[in-house]
Length: 368
Image (cartoon, rainbow, N blue to C red):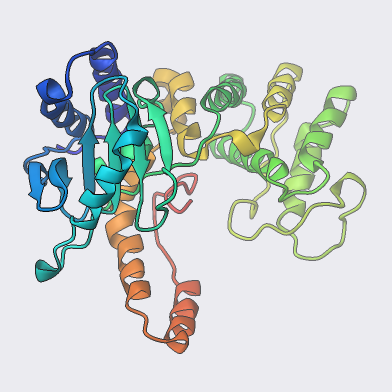
């Protein structure tokens, strides 16, 4: 049964608590461990075609082989996983079956119950994509996303989860305050939050030079007589202008931002406490904030009120169940089938004009 990202995380927390103190042998519980791990991701190990003890002539028995997808080699707790790498390399080399056009497994997992190494040997044979402890797996469940289905891509980008949680809390508290006092129409408040969050990401990712959003908020805090609706609204309008006009002073580093986000500038007056919350949010290093979980964390802070505020977030694993087979995989198949540079250029032109219609895209995280 398919599970949402939140359900996967909750299942993995129980899974980690159960196995964190296991100290027995590899053979005694490896199959139970792997069946339960697949179940955490909403998959049935047997139904998807993953085999236990699959024999290969030169390498022996693989603990688990999901043809074309992954190999898992289990070792007893506290075992040094490095000692198993050559053995698993032989498994991987024999995991392809040319007769029925099954490629070598894309993913290789070494596991000693409390520790994991995840490899992608076809692309990165010299180093594991990630090494992770069982205790950290619930927060970084996306490193094993492929267990949720062959079209679900894992993510190995390491962000600061605690920082993301703290940043989301500040933004959500500011938003709650705006809603509680009806500071503006609901759509304006939502747009204001989205435009502000984009600016915080953009400044720390060097997409907006010289910190115009941060400097504007600092000026507002220093001079209570200024209007945040006017000053921040001016910045948001400027980000929707193509020319260099009006880009002076603290706005000299701004550039035109295409797309719809700034097509309407959100003009919302913040009270002093809301400005302080916004300034506290700005103080985080947004280049280390994880955009794929930011929305879910905001939901958590908003609690039951997220429905009345229209705030709903879709986990990346759920997004990829749709985007993977409908968008990514078809394009990858066309890329892999290219036979000449000319065909590549033509495909690139087609890709650049490719459009996706998502009539309920919210903040656009599907497209992200």
